[in-house]
Image 1 (cartoon, rainbow, N blue to C red):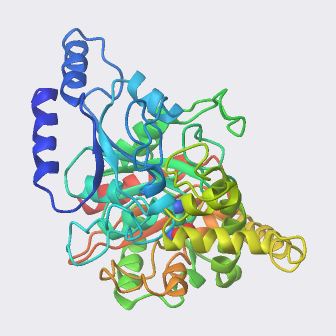
Image 2 (cartoon, rainbow, N blue to C red; image 1 turned 135 degrees about the horizontal axis):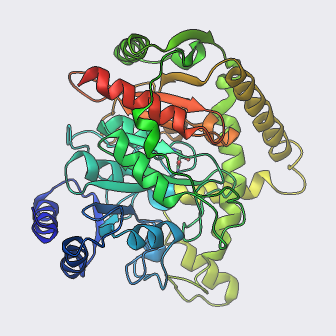
Length: 449
Ligand code: GLN
């Protein structure tokens, strides 16, 4: 099929879709398709020619809106491309649109968007997971080939698990964050959400590597595509028993079957333990609140986006910030509180120490094996409205994903071969060892095909 026909078919499918997965559509998509097609015809096209991308709406694409699914940025148009977007376009990837998400990436369900919730393509009464809700839903529903999401505490892996697609959060500092609206700078990473493992390996190969616009990325660009063909014989995979605590029976069964499939491919399965998983959620939230409240200071109605004039400067800032949603406001207030001089030692400093302790345990467990595994989420996609009224309940869903971010480690969610609602199996590796995750995930894919 010609690229322009494929793009047209996707645009029609997006138009018909009721999932609310997209916030904006690229008006130049058809022109872009023709340009890329000409390159394909002349044999000069890049590695991503033929791929149609959706991009989470907290990643800048020049000339398109960058809303973060917030009223605050509803009409803000980005004047530049994020580094990851630049690299995709340079390899002839086509961007079809920007995807819906939890407002400023705050959520695990896709329900906090100013533009309304995204629906799960497997059951429209259920959430797709968040915060990269539209990214995972758009891939799962066949509205594009691949997507970019961002993951601060699980936002690539959670919706990948709920929507039955592959999602990878790379090692902290391996993919440039230039052009990503930050949520919590020390935790955020951009990564691919795809239908299969080899697409993720290809996209990661294009977007990773040092960038003069982001000094936290130090490593040279690496090609990951070779890993998907690697044999996993003798690879040591640690099953973390604490990752199964409190998880639903059907999820546990599916993941244990997945582990058996890896064993069938020659992996050596061993026991592993990360007891501090029990404090991962409060540790993540306190760290994230502190960084988030600081990152959100720039949205004051004076520099970007929505502005509502008040009686004086303070009043104008307060009025303008009233555009933010409830969950975002809650986090700004809590982050401000825990970093106040009077309370800092009680809350924020303690949270920093807890973060170190979790990282220490994760690294110790990874000293004894190549990968750590367990479920991505403790349950399958829940119903719309089920958890949104109870923030603590919502926060607890992140129990199994946040440790990777707190430790800076790469982790992925692999869609398991199950009947009914999708279940994801999570794999963690040492920093820089995405290759091992991709090898094991590809071996699972082959085993279950
Ligand atoms: N669910 C988590 C939160 O609400 C993770 C968000 C994310 O990774 N962006 O903070």
